[in-house]
Image 1: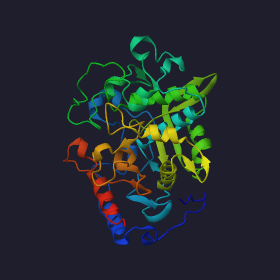
Image 2: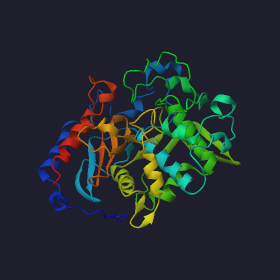
Image 3: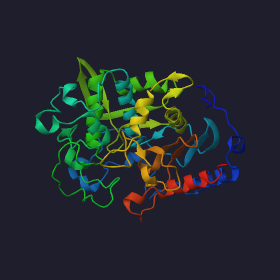
Amino acid sequence: MYFPDADEWERRDPEAVGLDPDAVTAAVDYHKLNGTPREQIDYDFADHETWDDAEGEHGQRIGPHPARRGGPAGLVLKDGYRVAEWGDTRRVDQAFSVAKSFLSVVAGVAWDRGGIDSVDDPVREYVDDGGFEGDHNGAITWRHLLHQTSEWEGTLFGKPDAVDRNRAVGKDGEALDKSETRSLREPGTFWEYNDVRINRLSLALLRTIGRPLPRVLAEHVMGPVGATDTWEWHGYHNSTVDVDGTAMKSVSGGGHWGGGLWISARDLARVGLLYLNGGEWDGNRLLSEAWVDASTEPCELNESYGYLWWLNEGRTLWPSAPESAYAALGHGQNTVWVDPEHDLVAVLRWLRYDEDAEETDARTEQGRFYAKLLDGLD
């Protein structure tokens, strides 16, 4: 496996690493021709003051957004080498829910270093800020938060958890309309994609580690893998909290209401390469292999989800890809896709989605890209 230095990244012709150049070209051309259109996500983020009309008064943006987004861009790595690159891969862009997988990375840093003894520990044993009191919230474990099965109840930074209940993301038809109410289940018994609860995880990690999460990520992961210093991880205008007498910003796990991870395709590819190599970078252990393995094991309530990574269990999400493939996914089909079976990493920025498809079929365009790419393997 090749690991690029901070200021260089060697490129190899596809055929030199066992890929059909025509197949690689076909995959890249497909993305170039199927970028996210303006009617799906406008180029001007600054004009978007709300996320979803169904959220009513709670839908207002409370964090920053980049002024504009970019166009189709991406990389394909084989054995660590760049075999394809298109668009502006150095552009810092909003990554939306890819930030959730980065929260999983930071949780892994804490777990590896003993900051979290067990993911099955109740979070209340680590965090005493009123967010995990009572019989219901007090039963929530780190695993529940990482699997999105916590059913945490409360209001955080002005957003009640109920405003993000019933989201259809990852559902197979059982989700209600977001404007409808839903009774809570017991923690660990119901899977739901919910950004308020993700932000509760972020705040819990901040209080447990005692340092801003972007600094932890930079020190333990982004710096060692040679990422640039152009990436940013934002919270909200009202998410500054007191941690042991020091004011710190709690970052968001997506761009739902602003904030989130702003990062280039090249820096995303480095994190993908780290995971492809089981948490090791050029002989240096940055994340334990045990954490990477646990992160990519399916949740009992959603076989397509691990610790904030999307999985291909049963080849459900991407039928053309191996079952072992997994990805960090965000709005706009921002993607860091890892294929351990073929030693491949693909980063996609701004791919269209089929508005006529069912929610569970929304990754059709990703699947077509992978199918074209994998068609060229020897």
